Image (cartoon, rainbow, N blue to C red; front, side):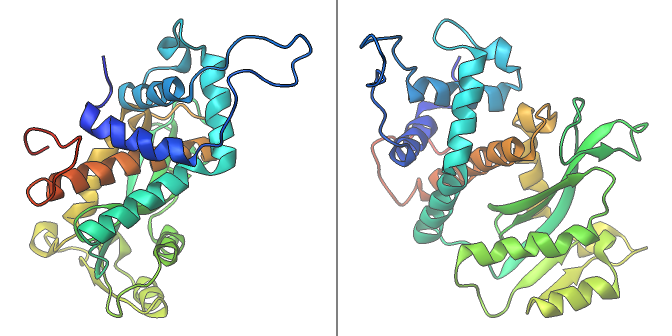
Length: 280
């Protein structure tokens, strides 16, 4: 069962393959001149997509084509090469060139997920009987395209994570002169407003004690993006131990979300080989 439709998988793999180094099928320094053929990168890539979408373990996703150890070792190799953040950056640049990122309106909010296995960037949940959990402070543009995130323990408050989250904006290149940051009532403080002034932006923050939907403004975009990310079951219930692996999986999920949104918005105006028959 494919994890994603072919019109989404094929362009992802085409770009991903360009970022990988060229490797021979057999190692040239083997003493006997031959050994087991290297598992194809495409096989590992498809396995990672299945792992991300279905949320199963590495052992459960392994089969005769490759083992769980091969999936993890190739994943770590790609993380060391920095392939996942580069893939996400290319997707963002393509979206900005074809559709345009709405960087004049930014939405930031935190999201809590379970992390039963513990590990880095986790903490004791104050609302789930002290179980281990993961919090991400996510940032999106005015449409909901994920721009970046900061991982922290579930026991961390959202306002202290705002500054490192906004710092991810500077990785995107030139920014608009006037940026509005949309935040919920949890950020309603003078310290938050001073921080936004330091970043050269102003905030639209929901006030404490007032009905949130009345002043929700454009903050719902980041809530929708959190739901898109949680649709990948490996992120909704995180079993990874290392923060670098979690970031890599989030980069892959954000790339899928960006390319899917790009295909949806460009469907009526552009033509390409893998274009789906109906609007995604």
